[in-house]
Amino acid sequence: MSKVYFVPWKQNTDMVGKFKKALKNSNILDNINKGDKVAVKVHVGEYKNTSHVHPLYIKELVSMLLEKGSEPFLTDTTSYYCGNRFTAVGMIKNAFYHGFSYANIGAPFIVLDGLGNGEGFPVKVSEPLNEIYVPELFKEIDKMIVFSHCKGHALASFGGSIKNVAMGCVTKKSKLAMHKFVNFCYDETLCDGCDACTEMCDREIPKIKNGKRILSLEKREDCMHCPGCMEACTKGAVKLSELEKLQHVLPIAVEGIFKILGKENVTSINWGANIVEFCDCMPFPGSRIKDNIGIYLSKDIVAIDKAFLDDAEKNTFMFDGRPDPEIQMLQGERIGIGKLEYERIVL
Ligand code: SF4
Ligand code: SF4
Image 1 (cartoon, helix red, strand yellow):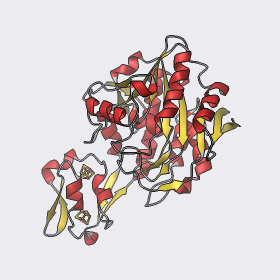
Image 2 (tube, helix red, strand yellow; image 1 turned 60 degrees about the horizontal axis):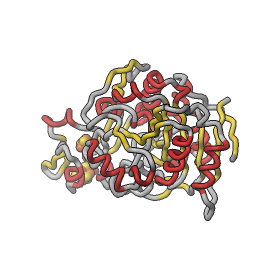
Image 3 (cartoon, protein in one colour; image 1 turned 180 degrees about the horizontal axis):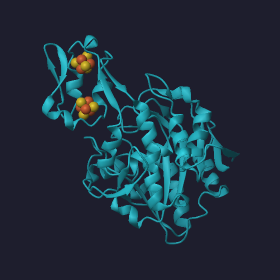
């Protein structure tokens, strides 16, 4: 049975200090050796997002990794959709604005997928994804610590450690491939031609014709399934469908990353605080849907997400037609990336 260390959240207490103690009192950093190149996979948040993991927690982790004589660096991949994090330069600026600077943290921020256009190398994975494209830098990494913010997600329902690795450790090509598992449906009877979706789409795919939305034929292939137009439509005319398919492919992408790094070399930390409706890719991530719960540490990527979800209750994330987030974990155990059963150790 996998161990999940848990630090319960208590208001008006030094949670950063408690986290530091948990790093010392758990075994999750036992495999970090002198000279190891350790990637700390973070999400620095889209520009102006304030719900992402606070950099002070990352700083404590980095201090501990430095004490062990390893060479930690913060990292993430560029986004596949337009925005501040689309290029490496934009992403590094964003990291700096949000406090993930060398001066604050004590480790550099290195973008995983080069300047942001690298295709990466293919890795065979299970059906129906079949292959993922992984940044070249993974060939030089010894260990990875996945530091995830637990929150809602418009497509994946819930984002934790599995989601962070699946979408955050592959190149743009695979991010798009995974998003294309989700479909959109459009109910013309609900559309009043308000234009909100056309303004939202950077790729100029939706158009208004005779007071209704149409999709420009020549650009349809460029659709990134992002899903900006769905979020912009307050009339409910644009909806997502087949979201379960994305839940199924996320753990499959993790399978590919584990093939490269070795499952035993990946450790997860889940920050169960600022639990909001939308992910850190959104500048304005919506309302809080749950009070702060605590911080989780584990060497099992499935067990850690399951432990958080058990505490947060999966129904919390199943609103607006969002599917059962536990699918990610069930699929994860089925393909062998981790275990659903865990032993909780409260620190
Ligand atoms: S935002 Fe919705 S209601 Fe407005 S034009 Fe687009 S589909 Fe129609
Ligand atoms: S999902 Fe909507 S906003 Fe996103 S690229 Fe496609 S048409 Fe544009």
